Image (cartoon, rainbow, N blue to C red; front, side):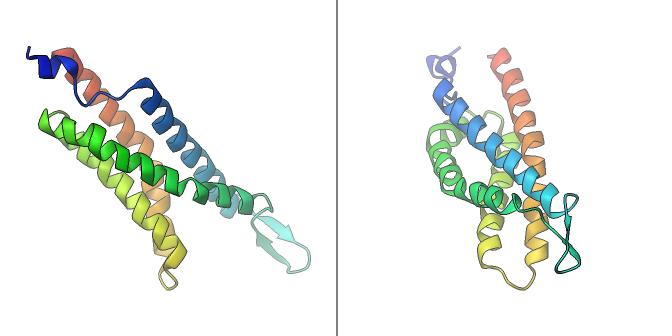
Length: 152
C-alpha cells in the first residue's frame, strides 16, 4: 500500500460529515414536508371553496430555500477537498458521478424554481424526484466507498 492511498486523501473529516449529513438531512426533511403539504396535506379554504396548502408550508418552504446557499457552499468545498482527490485515486468514480449529478440537478432545479414561469411544474417534479433520489445515491456512494476502503 502506498502512503498516498493509506492516507485516503478523499476521506472527509467528522466535521465535514456532520455538516453534509446535517444540511442534506434538513433539506430532505423540509423538502418532504413541503411536498406533502402541497399535495396530500391540502386543507379546505372556506372562503375560496378550494383546497390549499396548510399555513405552515410557506415558512417551511422559506427555510428549505434558505438552506440553498449553504448546500452550494458544501458542494463547492467537496469539489476541492473530496471529489478531486477521489478522482485522482480512481475511487468510486461511478457512484461519485451519480451523486454529483443528482446534487447538480437539485442545485439547478432549485434555481429554476425561482426563475422559471412557464414549465414550472416540470421543474418542480425534477426537483422533487432528484431530492427523493439523493438518499439512495448517497447511500450507494457510501456503500461503494466502504467496500473500497476495505480493499486498500
